[in-house]
Length: 439
Image 1 (spheres, rainbow, N blue to C red):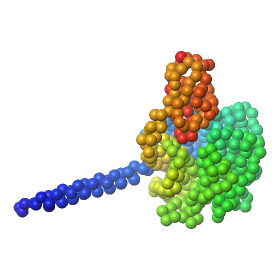
Image 2 (image 1 turned 45 degrees about the vertical axis):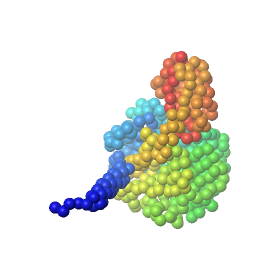
Image 3 (image 1 turned 90 degrees about the horizontal axis):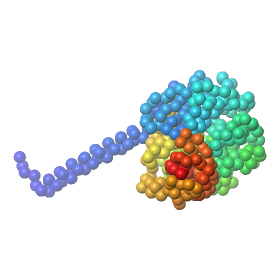
Image 4 (image 1 turned 180 degrees about the vertical axis):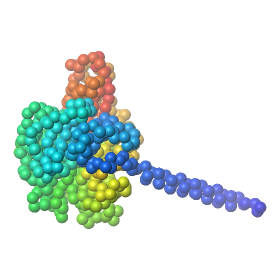
């Protein structure tokens, strides 16, 4: 055998390194792309709404309510109420026992409001009112302030309650084709309803007095060529709207809008998404990042997701082939799991998209930067953080909320009994949970 020269040996060694690198690289790309999407089944159901409480995800479907644990990606969904009924949306209290559901009356396209206090085993009618005909199929039928389940607003029933349903008042919105109802996360009196007018143009109705009166805010210049707004993501005065083919942003509470994306004239990398955006939400890791989902088209088998990085003003498009034909993604909910955004999408079945968060080290530094002291505490508990504190809730070890304050970093806990408590701190960036001892 002819001996190999030193130069040939080096070239051969480098070739082997490059080959191994390319193999590992493409394996990583393939496995990474494959691992991004997981089909969680429920494909024989039409999923109308998804919500996550603690470690459980609940799916409201055309065949009742189902639940599964989110700590693993198995497909073990358990029925938990109103099987055989079309459940449009369900609010689940933090105790995982109390459900408030909007449910279709047989096949009438009208709904009524039901309540369960035993995790869905039994339901009782909460109110005699019947919704408007043909308006049940929207995303957010129920709006409520964070962790305040006594204050509820029901979209097409035009009803509100401030005492958990013991008494009811009317929401005085206009009779328009509504798609969603929202409560501003920082101002409970600010109610927003969106949809389309009778002449097929998008609108927002905005109330600053808990729905007693509304002002109509047409969005013709923003949604040029479009006829509906389907959902809002709200961060103080900055709102992001998603509709049919158009996504936009306002920095002044909806007075003026700019388009972020218009798929009536799409950029090349987004041509195959389609025109029907149905849900928009912030990344729980970073409010500068948004997820948007919807329908590729009325006859598509695609599961579609858009990702927007506001800092770079960039859009990314992700898709997966559905296991079900004629896929119609309606809803989305997102969970932060160890600096990974776990995005759950509901249509014909449930799909999970997992995306690692950017700037993980910075996020961890911010997470560790929030502290509470003194601990144990006797009278005043202080929150040490550079974040803006929006709301603080304190829970006992049974999970019952016993104290709620807003916009403060000092909380008087002198009236609490001795024991262990959980403090939930809602900031302008994320939600923190800490334990403390009252002595």
